[in-house]
Image (cartoon, rainbow, N blue to C red; front, side, top):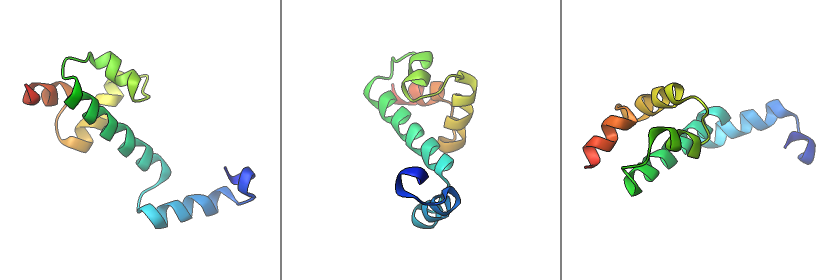
Length: 83
């Protein structure tokens, strides 16, 4: 993106943080977790491996760690709460 707009990458990162109050990586995780929660709301029977892949993660354990950090429960616990 920095090459396309002829801007320094660090400038873009700083502008991103200033506008959204979170880093690019934090924003990406936030979007992925939001999508995961929405997918579980739509289809609570979705397999954890399918969910992990659907939101762009390769490692189910890391995905679960991120989900718990964001929502306070593991995806499996969230699924059980939705039933």
